Figure 1 (cartoon, rainbow, N blue to C red):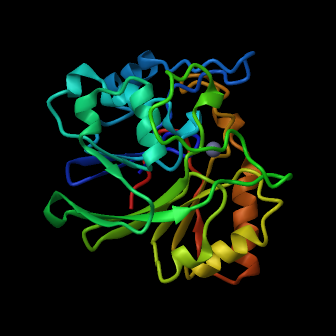
Figure 2: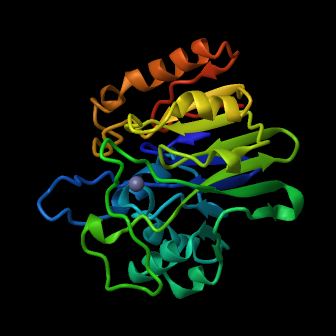
Length: 282
Ligand SMILES: [Zn+2]
């Protein structure tokens, strides 16, 4: 597994590559008007230097916000990958947003429209993907950035606010009988939807959760005390992969919060602190 920054992952096994929320451009979202400016050169550099593997055979989308989905159209549109089948999973809204951003129609034919609850098999049983109904983060005022849904492709998105949330999904990938990986893109979850899941590795989103009831305690308990947990969504989302200060933008208190929760609950869970693009082997 390779952390792609924000909530993103590359998962590679048995010659296969999967992406979850692959946001790589890391453009400055704070500029006036929040212009949406994906940067294909970043993806080229990562692929050419071997710091990202591709093409993926599956892209999983947690929700429609730019820091999760803005690069999916350019990834699906890469000319060098045109002959490869790439499935994409997300909600109806995410599909409409991808179409509005210019995703090639041929790619959208391989779009898997999910609502949560799907239990899918890929690669003739090589791996299984469970799509899990989930929730977006809710910050202090109980709201969140750019909520909303779309029932048809809107005008071409120009601003980050045009990429609405459109529902939030989590994903559990089971690699044969070897490993179960559960990934979140939002700092929230539906407790009942996770009942019975026993992932080995959980990527836990760590944006503000102060308005949620016992976020980490409930999550770790519901999942039965996973073997490994990894904090994500705790970097600054804009510092480039080659910038010397990148590691320092990662909020170290996220791992600390997880360690404290593990201690409080008397679990044996190991907290792994991810570094951008550095492979984690399981
Ligand atoms: Zn979001």
